[in-house]
Image 1 (cartoon, one colour):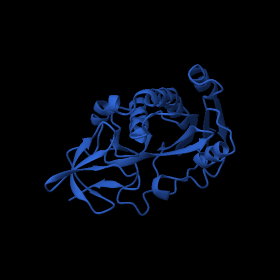
Image 2 (spheres, helix red, strand yellow):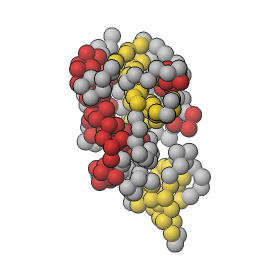
Image 3 (cartoon, one colour):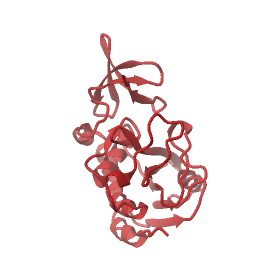
Length: 251
């Protein structure tokens, strides 16, 4: 039985977000889907929604993310947010998670956390508008225990690989309050102040990469708005589309 530190998280976050609530559900289709449903119905109070098991979890570009109790940490954080520029938000989220969890965690543009050249987790950011205001939902899935690598080139990483006492509840306690602080700061200042810290964990910088739309070149890091800078023959391309995925070229 997982122990969830809901009260401790509420005590840390509620001074930052009035009306903040923490909900833990034994099972749901998708925490992101549920918070988006609520937002469209006009329910936009700040909420951290945790699922012990997801039956229809969603990742970026429509990929599925299903979780069994204890194997993963799956949660979504929804709150009203009105940044001047949304560019780089998923990178800011990834940086906050990585810095809260472990020094070895790297960031793969634009939405993944990696450990030892293997995927540890992913991020899905969605937004809804209501009455002229914006509500953002940040969904996070992290592998706590090792998972099967069926159909993958390499089995996924797990947080237990670097944190021997890791549990879903302990990981949530580490990341929740810093993530809220990061989102509130991002609304004020955007991604640019985080650029150097992101660069310190950038998995792709300096490596040959290929994009899902067929571009191949050397990754030069990310710019002040979070765009991936890609060195192509004779020019530098800035990749900004959320529908483009990138992977390192392996020999």
